[in-house]
Length: 269
Image 1 (cartoon, rainbow, N blue to C red):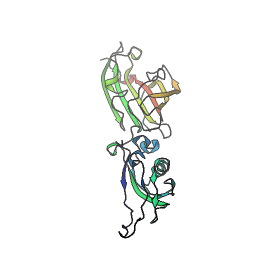
Image 2 (cartoon, one colour; image 1 turned 90 degrees about the vertical axis):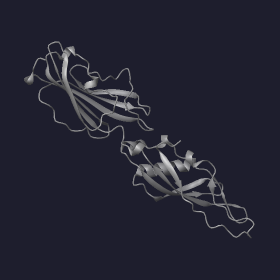
Image 3 (cartoon, rainbow, N blue to C red; image 1 turned 180 degrees about the horizontal axis):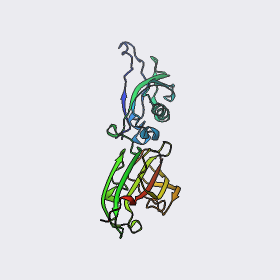
Image 4 (spheres, rainbow, N blue to C red; image 1 turned 90 degrees about the horizontal axis):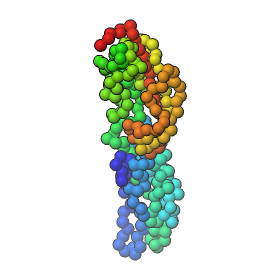
């Protein structure tokens, strides 16, 4: 149920048992539904996934005489507002209790203390980190590619677009263009784009798209933010599968492709 979201550790706050001479000892409030169902992997806040936020949150729940949670207080902060707020909100929505009882067997209000650990998969990073990739190759008079090399800053997702393994054998419109550099820049829409040094040469095309990625890893929306030169192979229609899977909420990313040709170093392969 919880492959990477919240690992619950309940802290025993029960008082010492009363004397056996008391016919009806007081009973603390106990969970009526499984704590494993209070928070699931789908509840990990999207902003926390993107920012690699994780940690332990301690809470005290106020429970009324009917077993309903009426309040939630942070006793130990994870250090991340989104995780603290999500935990309290979800527990007040989902946690249910058998009410506490006094020595006369009457239902009374009580409290319940526990800790919850939010952990990302393998302690890993968000799949939507910023990255930049530079792919360079040469073309001859027929547009045949040769001598392809690529490097990157950040971590482009495996199985995705770009890089030497994704280039076609020939690109007719790039015939006799000398040294060609394809620059790909990827980042979340609410963060600054990675900075890079533009290589020498003439810009053949420059295009940026903004895409909304669903939790399942599909492009659910796509718009072209700007475009110069011929259309590149980053489609907005039909919508396509993205090479990474996100968190429980859609995220918006921006992807830019710039093609630069430097004929000053032209050598026909």
